[in-house]
Length: 172
Image (tube, rainbow, N blue to C red):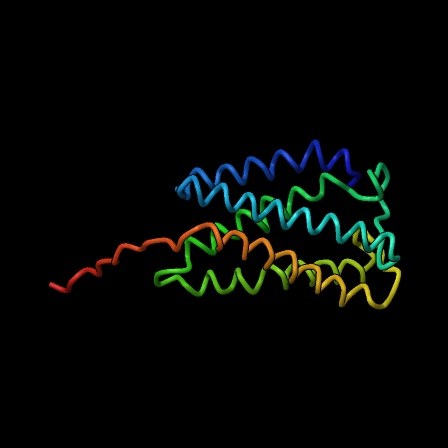
């Protein structure tokens, strides 16, 4: 899929999905704004690291219509889905009985991103091509750094969510 097609066909779906999740997961305005800020940090770090990777010859994108050697619309996904939505879900489930979901997301999102990139490189189905054997470890480092940098920023400015004690039905 070329960049323009992604921007026209996929980016609106990502935004509608993100807004739909926000609609059904009521969160304080501060949490939503800080999750967006964390997502922007994550996407910005991803963009800068991809630019560094291009100029350092670690990997490069093989698409048409690149802007500054980067597929700029592709960074919508790290900002809204892996970043903002991931941070909000972790915040939402951190306290309570479903704490394990927050842990899976906290550990799983960077692992998923790296494994997705690695499988794409190994099967020649990615939009980027590694230029050095160091591309894999550097990509793993990028995912860990960008995800947790955004998460630390998010956690710094959003207090823990208060959880009402859940009442269990009493046996009659």
